[in-house]
Amino acid sequence: MTEFEPRYYLSFDTLMLQPKREGNKVFTRVIERNRTLTVPKKSIHIVTSSCDFYGSNYTTVMNTSRRLFGDNKQKAPFLLTNGFGIPFIFIPTLSPLSDQNVWISYHAIDFFAAEGLGTTVTLENGMKYKLDISVPTMNRQYTLAKLLERDFFKRQRSYDRTSFLFPPTDPPTDYPTL
Image (cartoon, rainbow, N blue to C red; front, side, top):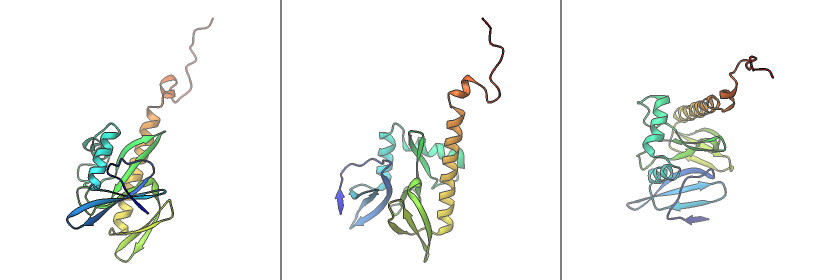
C-alpha cells in the first residue's frame, strides 16, 4: 500500500527515490524498508530539503564529493550525513537535476545485475527494481560511493580523539616521575 506524504526527509530507512509522472506533474515514489509512499515533490527537492534538515546544503554535500572525485563528475554520489559513525550515501542514476533520476541509498543495495539494456537492483528489503541504467554505469556509481565511504572512514580515523593523546607510535616515556 502506498501512503501520501506532503513533506518528507531522507532517513536511514529510505532505500530509493523514484520519479513518478502523472500528467504534467512529477511526484516521487519513496521506497523505505517497510513502506512505500508518494511525495508531491521532485526527488531533487526532497534531497535539497533533507540537506537543509541535516544542517548542510546541497551545494556543500556536492562540493564534498567533487573534492574527492573532481569537478567533472556531474552525477557523483554524495554523503548526506552520518549517524553513529555510519555514512549516509546516495547514488544518482542520472544527472541529479533530471526528472528521470533515481536516487538509491548505497547501503540499501544488496545486489544488481543486467536485465536487458537496464539493471535490476535488489535492495536490502528483498524487493527488486528495474532501472534504466547500464550495469557498467551502475558499477561506476557503486564504486564511487564506495570511495566516498572509504574517504569518510579515513577522515573519521584521522580525527579520532585518541590519536591526539598518543601518536600512532609508542606513547611517550619521558613522563615526570614522582
